[in-house]
Length: 489
RNA sequence: CGGGGUAUAGCGUAGUUUGGUUAUCGCGCCUGGUUUGGGACCAGGAGGUCGUAGGUUCAAAUCCUGCUACCCCGACCA
Image (cartoon, rainbow, N blue to C red; front, top):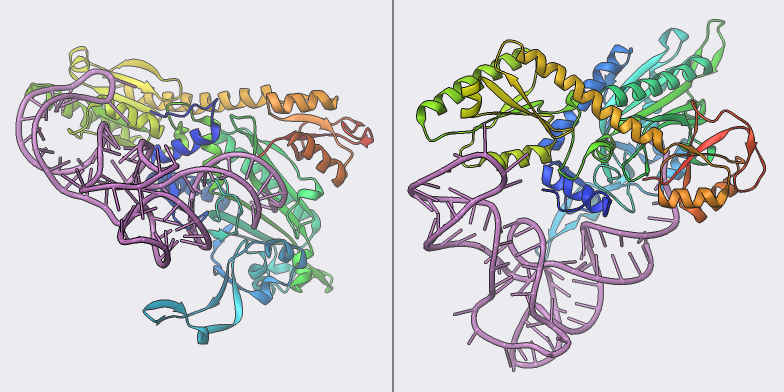
């Protein structure tokens, strides 16, 4: 049972879901998270599926060190300035005992401080310059799975933690056009991944310049709407232009024998995906996990009887069902622990968001059927214990996947609204949240004033909405198209 | 980083105002038994440097100070 109510206290509901489902907890060091077995198995599946897609699209994996020397880190000025505001710095290499206390050995001070990577552009571009000489070496399409550390002021499990796990792609291209294509291609890969695997609909767009990745020319993003009406930036891709190749002096010789700076991109999605997943789908009974990324698709719970004979039959039938489902590549768990009652187990797996639960007891044996519970709707279905059952379950999983997406899509689409009056805008954002399509004059100042007065920010200039000219909702000045406003995480 | 709040067994808590026996209760945990169709029941048991470091006092969970962590609000937020 989740005690907090989604509608009343969203933040505490979110924390309770994570705690009770066993996904993660804070570690005792501010902002750093322990990902527990169930949470990590979820991350492993997300990683496995996304990794497969990235490899299929021509990317290879690499691994760069977690530490970056201060001088390398400092070379690209804009990105350096920004990340310098909050990073972890390694300065010493030894600890010694002094008056029975552990203290840093000042003699072990490093000649040059090392930065725990907040992102890897600098070290990667410092290395790429050794790898790239000719147009024949291009494109470089690499991806890294790792962690990053950013000294965050205010943290929230999975949504913003001081250390997070992610993938960061870093590509090098011979032309601006090719780099632009890459940035948009990855954004579409992310969009499809969110839709097809995580069942999360997103809005694609470009970040206003005031909100782009520092060191990039442009940042593209996908934004997802959470159940409390706030937006979450769930993935980004950056067109870095020639900023990093110039900062690290990475040139290639083109077809005509002339030297040119390289065009580059970077892009990433992180453990924030899990936060978005929780806030998109879960309800007051716990997590709801789309089958495609569920660590367990089906849990089978035997309901025991007093009579040994019947128990034997229950187990025999359960095990047969498990083997059939496993052959169909379904992840099945059989929970025959006798120290927990069926009711206890039902609650447990509902909190954990397992898509399908099957109960088998004396009633099922008598009537040669099974009780099937689907987590997304909490409906119970009965199906005969026959050869059509595996197919039925596979189709049911597909249906659950679709239904979870449909629900999130309806919620998101229903929230999108065009507003042209500032008072109406203010009221709407406070009462309903959601995505608001309004005109903006494109200036930093107007964006800030609107944020101060409404708490809403410009999430993105969307690709798929609001392509008409108009007047800024606040200043009345010219606006080339509508942008997406919302409160956000 | 600023403002506010909190910290007592694995979790949730009483006790703190007004210092004074052996720190309260529930859940969980362990043992035995009966149970098992929506978080079972009975009996017995274990578990505490009261966040941490100091200070005041005959005496500190309780009063004072520093530190740390967590929660809420704000600032910040590829």
